[in-house]
Image 1 (cartoon, rainbow, N blue to C red):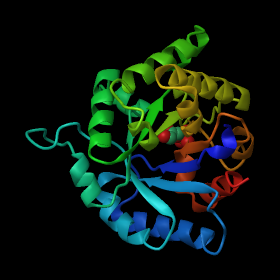
Image 2: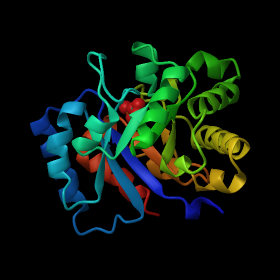
Image 3: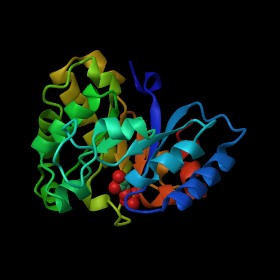
Length: 258
Ligand code: 13P
């Protein structure tokens, strides 16, 4: 098996941007730009703030755009002030959830242990997961990128069954490339995405590893997407800044059609 058998997926991570009304506007702009075009070659996801989900669910109707939340708690319900459950997300139209983004790890105390708990709970509830992993700049400079990313994948997927892996996308996001304008070179992205695929082969088997969509994220934009997406093990993108600009986001979608 090879890249051709995997689903390319372009996902926007809007982060903490857009009110519900603005979310509707942004989705409508994306819809207008893809209307009448064959975008069936790749999945399209918008990762929106929690409060935007109802409006976004209304806006994406009749389009191929799916919705993701940006976090989920592992408990079904209870005394967890400020948290949101998987059932709550599903009830307002989320099909996917982004888990373990480096901003949550860096600023909100997320650890591989809590990332793993969120992954398990989301999958059990029937959400699809976009699991984010990636090394810090110092880790890359120390030459331990492969070790760091392999460890994250192993810890974050602990207890995830082979059957559940059909609902997992992995996003490789080098932390030093996020929001910095510094993009990993296509070769660097390919190298780490291939390492991740190797870890999946060791955890599960080679054929399952070949079937998993692995995205690159970190300053991906309309100008560099085609080269990154041409790499054998880079099956899509998780896009921050450029996902807020409809024309740029759709150019990345177009680059993934090839
Ligand atoms: P940027 O595309 O803004 O670098 O963000 C990447 C990212 O963090 C996506 O999750």
